[in-house]
Length: 124
Image 1 (cartoon, rainbow, N blue to C red):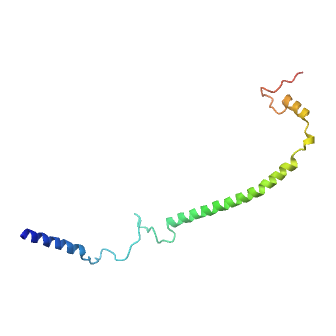
Image 2 (image 1 turned 45 degrees about the horizontal axis):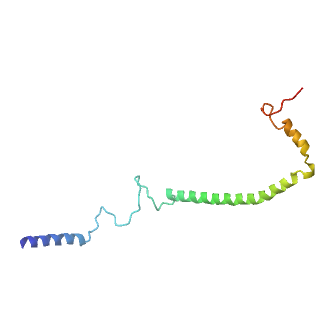
Image 3 (image 1 turned 180 degrees about the vertical axis):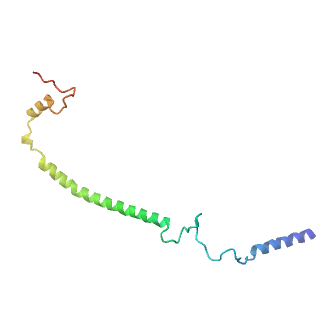
């Protein structure tokens, strides 16, 4: 019975220690603290922290990418019809094509460089 009573008193003592609130000591601050780095700088709460500068840089990059996409789409929308108009206006007519003359030009090798092996040799 004495062992049971000693065990109960030790259990009661540990329960009281767990449930009693500890008084604040002078060494521990009572106000909530902000997270700090190893250098003692605060992670949050400063107006120009590293996290906010990264967020601003990402936002600026997103805005610039979006602006570039809009300008690119506008340039494509304007350039495609203008290119088509240029090609249609500079294309020679069907009547101006002379197949016999073009065949002779190709067979002479006018479009090949002088040292090309398929270029026909000039006969003197």
